[in-house]
Image (cartoon, rainbow, N blue to C red):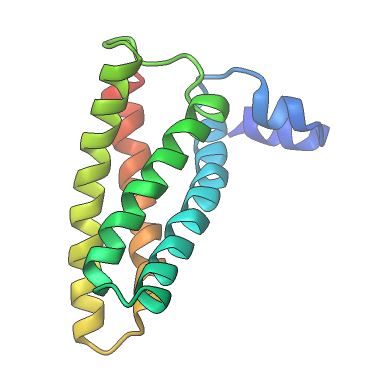
Length: 147
C-alpha cells in the first residue's frame, strides 16, 4: 500500500500508470482504472445493442462483455501486467485471459438474471455485476496468470 501512496503523491502520470511494478496495490489501482474504461466500452455497447438495435438484453450483455474483454486485455497489457504471463506466449495469454473473462461473463449473466428478476433496472444491474466481476477478474488473473 505504501508504494501506491508514494506513487500517487508524485502526481506524475508516468510513475502512477506506466512505470513497471509487480506491487499488488499499484496493479489493483491500475486495474480499476483500466476496468473503468473497459466497463464504459462494455456498458455503452450493451445499451446501444439493446436500445438502438433492440437486441435481447442477455445477448447484448454477452457481446458487450467480449468487446469489454478485448479493451481490458489491451489496456491491461499497457498499464497493469506489463511483464506478461510466465506460462504462455501472447496468444496463450489472451486465451487464458479470455477463459477467466468467460467465467466472469457467466457470473455477470447470473448476477444480472437475479437482479433483473427482483426488479432492478438492467443498467444498474450491470453496474453491480461489473463491480463484483472486476474483483474476480483481477484476483484470478493476478494469481493464476501473472504470478
